[in-house]
Image (cartoon, rainbow, N blue to C red; front, side):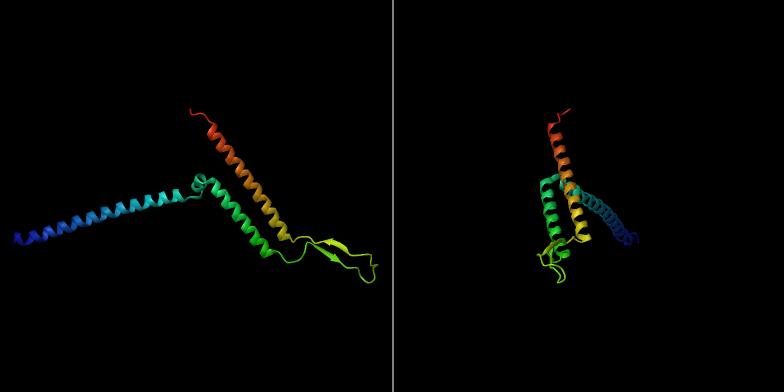
Length: 142
């Protein structure tokens, strides 16, 4: 009878070994996946991309801002001219046409103010970056 149980015990021990190996490999795969995820987040983070490619980032931001401004302006603006000519009324003397200025809408004025603020912010960022680059190159190693 012991001979009949030996193959079953060896099969059961082999199954146990395989289950142990599978659980170890599963933990290894989980650890590697977690590490890969962290590495990818570090490599593709916007801060790291800007640090590695500052000029390209500034150029892309500038072009994107110009395109976004044109798109928004195209969506907002109407086809009215900036100045309108007021014709003389029949009861008024006809000495000529009078020009009156048309005020931009509140939305246009707000978009203009936002655009100016974005340009000022970009300028400040560029100056700060240039100062940091200059300081890092002129610092003496300690």
